Image (tube, rainbow, N blue to C red; front, side, top):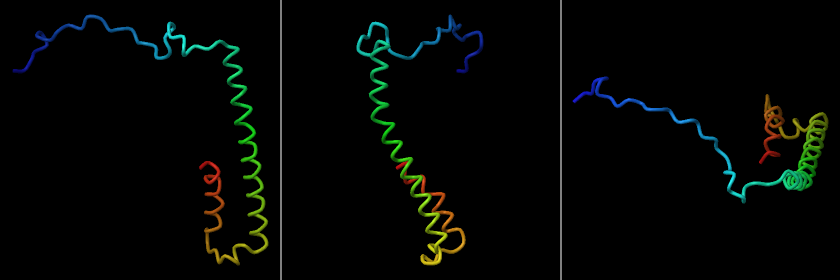
Length: 97
């Protein structure tokens, strides 16, 4: 029951690619440029200060842990080999979580 090339149905026409996105008649998903700017400004005013504080705390933490290591942190905690380096490299992931 194998089909031969002659028995195959011909391909009529390949459809044009469809564009994904909101439809023009859908008024709920369209925003004017002024509304979009206002929304982005509101998001920026709420997100950027939080990110700035997190960046500042990360900078403070890196500076403090470096100073503590100079003053004997590795000796007090009995860190051996690359244990301090592992902490230093895994510290930024804490801020991402």
